[in-house]
Length: 394
Image (cartoon, rainbow, N blue to C red; front, side, top):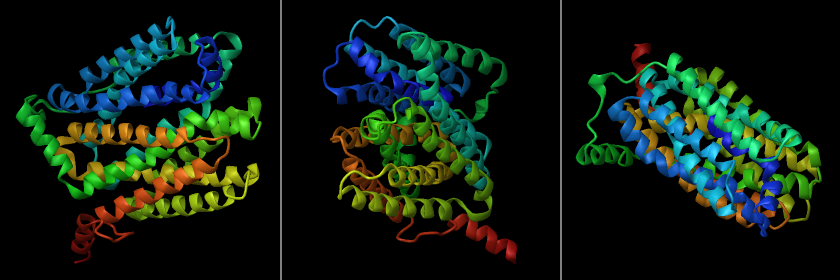
């Protein structure tokens, strides 16, 4: 999970230099360094799920990380902007295995609120990395060219393979592996997409991820061009990422008491309400930084609460096809989030108004998905858990 966060956020301080070095004219085209990775990452997840259900978790994961490492090292020699973007897609394809198989391993070992707790801790790792990744990128830029960033990613991937070889056990028993046939794969996909609750929470995760894909590529322009933070950009960026990580950590501590639904539903409502406040403020001109930053930071804190729980809720009913379920939801959330967030981010016009409108739109879409999943009810505890509580009471 760390490799994925690093691949996205370590790039941000180097975007202007990369664009200048490879003769990019349109500033918004720089966003493709982030979006191309996310697209490859999203599409390839459809393959890693069935592969991990058939061959186990270890081999497909290590193969993916090896592709990630090779693409990272090849990018050092990229002669053109187009070739760099292609290699970023390939790097994302390799990184896809880590996301799918990490979620599958968690589902192999845990269920219910225990799964949500572990998912939150893993998600926290994914969110802690952005705190330091831009600073790592900035430090690398102080001592060398932007190509060194790709060298660092390649070396880290090789270290992950070596570490995982000795430390990562196989969690899918041979008796539980599914055949890799067209009929078996189609049947597994059908199980995933026909489960209303799981599928709608998967779509809700897609809209929440869109807000990340909307803001991250534009963050350097917002913090540096609008608010003139200069070298303090990594600090501001890391501050919002830190709050997402804190949100996930707190969620891991309280989810067993309050439940996945209550926490995620509350978080989505707060996220949407704050986005509306941000939009109203942006309509009247430049939002002061002391107003903008607390709103944005709180939105990302709520993102940390909502996303890990919604991922757990989407996986909860699908333990028998965990790998396929993880790949389907990973594909939907990543590719859909990139397309939606990339489009909304491309509307950036030198103000935060399009971003505020985009945050409000994805917040409302997320809320609609949750209402469909829960048949119009919010803050429930889930039928299975309610039944267990009722049984325990008697």
